[in-house]
Structure formats: C-alpha cells, structure tokens
Length: 320
Image 1 (tube, rainbow, N blue to C red):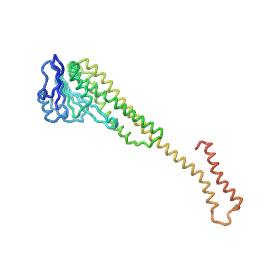
Image 2: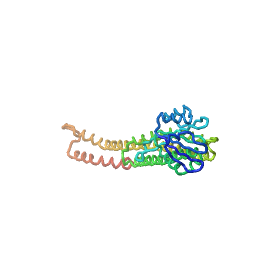
Image 3: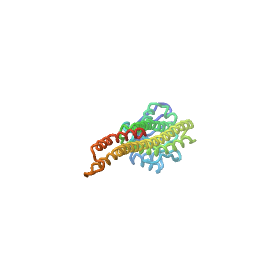
Image 4: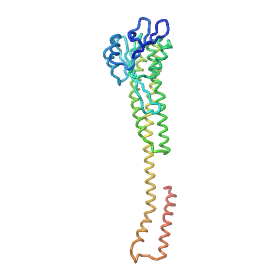
C-alpha cells in the first residue's frame, strides 16, 4: 500500500515499503511517498504523522473530484486528473485521479488505481537521483507532465478514427453504425470536463512564487500549461470533427433518399401514360372509338416508343 523513496543529502535514492517511513523526512532528506489502493486506516496514518488537514484527508477518501489546488500552511494539496484508453477502442477511457501533498522536503501522492504515467516517473526516481535532487516539486512536475503527454496519442487515435469514419461515409461504402461516433463524442465530453480544471491547476503552479515550487520548476510548469492548452484545443477540434461526421452521415442519408425518390419518380412518369393507354383501350366494350386492326398496331407501337422518348427527353435534361 505504501511505497517510499528517500534521497539522503549524500547518496542514491532508496526505495522501501516500510510503513514506519511514512512520516516527514529527517533534515536534508527528500522523501516521496506513494499510496495506491488505500483505505481509511492508511489515510489516518497520513493524517496523524503529517498533521494533514481533515478536509484534505476527506478529499483523498472521495474520488471523482474536480482538479484543484489548495494551500494548507506548510504544504500544498493538489488534485490532478488524466485518462488512458483501450488501444483497441479509443472510445472507452479510464479517468485517473491523483491527490498530491507537496512540501519543501516531501511529496505524498495518493490514487485509487495505478496511473501508468506516474508509475513511469516513480521507476525513474528509484534510479535517477536528479529527479528528487531538484526537490519534491520536480517529481510532481514530471508526474503531471507525463500524465498530460499521455493524452496526445489517445487524441490522435480518436482523430484518426473519426477521419476513417467520415471517409467511409463520404465514399458510401457502408451503412455505418453511428453508435461508435456517439461513444467518441461522449468520451470527448468527459475529456474536456477533465482537461479544463487541470489546465487551471497547472497555470496556478506555474505562477506561484513560494519555497514549495522553485522558480526553475515554475518555468517547466509553464511548458506543461502549453501542452494542456494544446490538449484542450485538440479536444475541441475532435468534437467539431465528430459533428462534421454526423452532418456527413445525415447528408449521405438525405442524398440516398433523394436518389430513391428520383428513381421512383422516373418509373412513375414512364408508366403513367402506359397505364392510361392500357386502361382505356382495355375496356370491355364492343364499340370503342378507333377500334381497328391498324389502330391496334399504332397503339402497341406508341406503348413502345413513348417510354423510349421519355427516357431520351429526361436524359437530355440531365434528370437521369
């Protein structure tokens, strides 16, 4: 449940899983504590040993919060979100929520499920002393930066899928099922709901001037802010593309309906005079006007020539 990395003033990072180390570090040591799949007892350990505010501990016990940053005396409390997707289905996303307590000499991160980006930074910090040597804020920066960068491949995958759907619809090769488009639109709405508050949090970290966020790290947070801004813009572009796909689908259906109505109208126009002629001359009367062998031949010829003439006339007017 608890993972700890200690970086002493002289030496290399030391990773351990000793719960007794879950407390503020000794002077000169930088400590990063990561808590995954926690329970009430674990949160109580953090509250007692770090004297964290009960409201912050309560937030850690309740996920699905909005990304935010709050100041509690000697430490900052931040909530940051990210998401990952199934490689085979970009429409399905899993939202990750990381709670972080940042002080000048320690970083405590709490999350209810493994976050791939954060796990990658943790593995690097166990062997690369430069991460924690720059302070806990640098480890937090790298974690947020990797979480943000992990969004771009997913957005590119969604863009590609929407482009493929639109191309198939415009070619008219398939009656495409719009359920996948609606799934992508729902996922994009969730992404936008997640990314906007994260952008605000990163912006506040980039503008802070205190001992917990060094000036150098604040510069890098500004770079992360640019990345998250690009994510937000890419999400809006994908939403517009999804709307264009819907419009293309509706246009394709409308054009197909018009073609069907056009074909039926042409058939009706051709057979209407034929129906009149067969109906009139097929009446069961003896003394019909013009009833003779020669006129019978003329009527039969007209029934052949009339459709041909109508087809030629419609073709010249570009109705076919």
